[in-house]
Amino acid sequence: MKKTAVLVGFGGMGKRYLKTLQLMNFKILAICEKKENFFSDYENEPNIILTSDYKKLLHIKADLLCLASNTYSRVKILKEFVKKKNIKKIITEKPLATNFSDCLNIFKLVKKNKVRLIVNTHRTFSPNYIMVKNIFLKKKEKITSFVVNSPSAGLGNMGSTFFDIGLFFLNSEPTSIVGTVDSTNTTNPRGKKFKDPGGFGIVKFKDNKKMFFDLSENTGLPYVLNVKSKNNEIKIDEINNNFELISRPSLMQNKPLYFYLFKPNKKKLKLKHKFDVVKMTKYSIKKLFHKNFNYENLKNSIKVMELIFALFASSKDKKIIYLPLKKKYHNTNINFA
Image (tube, rainbow, N blue to C red):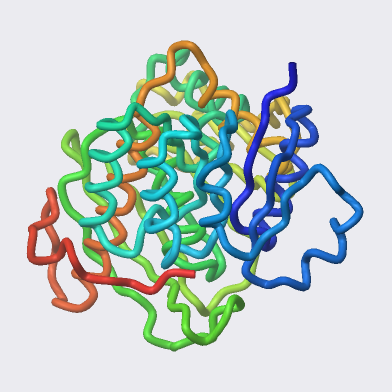
């Protein structure tokens, strides 16, 4: 028997969810989108409820809810579906909420109502990224730093993705963040009412691990990620499906680290799959239905949001922000798209 799904939000990511669900052979029960011009593509689908009002879908019993609405409405919609308990498995887009207080309340709510919730930061479930982490484990080398260079794609949008994968690789507790949020007021592609600026900074972790990120609004090249240890580095050019292992030659590995005038070994890694958001979202949905499901993804997503709100605080107050985030920052609202 086919699993069933309800989809709320049918912009770019909502359409990708539909493709993922079709790929996984789900039966689509309903689609909700405020912009009614989307109906024309699906009006010949008599078995799918089409509506611009999500409240009309709260009564539907389904196996899965895909929530791809804008961030400012997401928390309200999510809470109503969770309280109804008709759909016990939910995948939601990032960022999780527009303030940190809502993030904490969402966690309490889903746990209380025994609803499974995953934030679609699919890279942590991707075989490619698991492979990268395992390479360092096999070499018995601790990952010491994670570096992100990306064009401006918003701290809430792509920033939350990169922070999540950074937490995955570093596997440590962040203790502080310092940085700057761009003030160029670049128009958000989703509309003038939304604010999702770029920025740059450093996150420090308990065991002296570090995350460096530059998502500034003054660059437009494809993003590149670097995962580093003492003797090895993996450079990730995801868009071009290029993962490269760069290593100190074995003869150099026992020498002091200030010996760096040598030619490193380079090896292109064989990927488990090509970059494809539709197919990668499949890994997140599979995790929701796994018999050993836990809330680690949601806990990490809340840590990610804590870092983002702390970065805004650091930029505004012009100082290092130590974690956990103080309560005076919990209700600061950022109108993410």
